[in-house]
Image 1 (cartoon, helix red, strand yellow):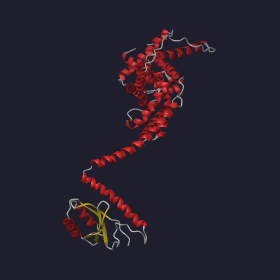
Image 2 (cartoon, rainbow over the protein chains, first blue to last red; image 1 turned 90 degrees about the vertical axis):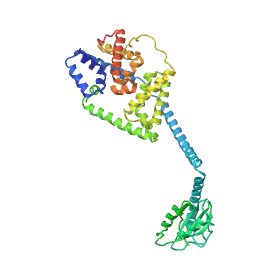
Image 3 (tube, each protein chain N blue to C red; image 1 turned 135 degrees about the vertical axis):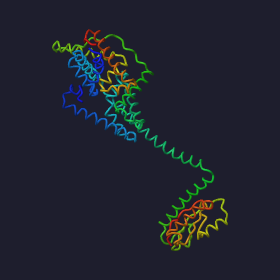
Image 4 (cartoon, chains in turn purple, red; image 1 turned 180 degrees about the horizontal axis):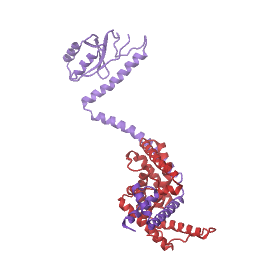
Length: 223
Length: 208
């Protein structure tokens, strides 16, 4: 046998299991045509493979225990993950609050209070039709036509003079407040200068973040 | 390419089915792994159903301890559940499973070293009522199986991976963590050792 065929002989097990590349397979086919030893080696490799397969087939399949254990542990892991997710969200929120500066914390508190106020206002708007109890923080006179209302919070460092100047400059008047979190409802008469829903007024308020630390459109009220 | 094993299994017409089956298995396994990575428990069950028998046999050949085999088998698939997102598809899912199974089996063997078997090749069982030549053939086949069992761990695992699990040189290299050239020589020496053991049992194969 040549050195080349010795090299090919090393590959016979993969020729037998069908994973050999086409080039190597062809080389073996060609060599076997005139190399009886290689043909004999191939026959033995097939014999070996047959014996190995038979040995494996004598092994009984596993019981149901492994799958039962796997699925039980996976189910338990799933529940633990959900619990961990809830904990991590709570921890993340706690961490977020701790990371805030006192000023930012105050703003965040204000935002939460605003959400609650908005929800209360929305509930009031949706749920109260006709005569009934009034929300304490809402102007009892109702909102005039062609006006827009905003909820604003004033920065702790803002002076009364600055606030008055800002409100007068924007054509705003306070209609109610302070509500929870120190929020006020202010109203502006709509005109071309304010935009159809007073959006330009809102922009003006948001720019003045040294005086106004929170501003948002208030939900429209029915009279 | 029509593999030799396909020819053994019945002919050319089986080749296409065999290759298609392999491709489909790869695609389905890949999809299952993606679903498992997304927390799909049903996909894990499906993957287990598809591979548990082969991985169980692979582990049984390594560990030879039924209880331990089932424990390690469960751990392999629990690792699949935990690590499916890390599967990069550089090998087939089955090769990935074999690699994980082997690592876990080796860890188990380090912790609980097996008792080494003693004794020579057993006498063949009498499978009478056959013509003499058939008896002789069965005799050789049984002796061959016993010789395979007597191979050392390194030789037996490469023989199993190639002849039973149909792994390519590259796959075996990945699973065992050795170079492809070493895979070829290790397989050669495993086969040579089998011939030596058979010769000791009175069967001269005339090879190598």
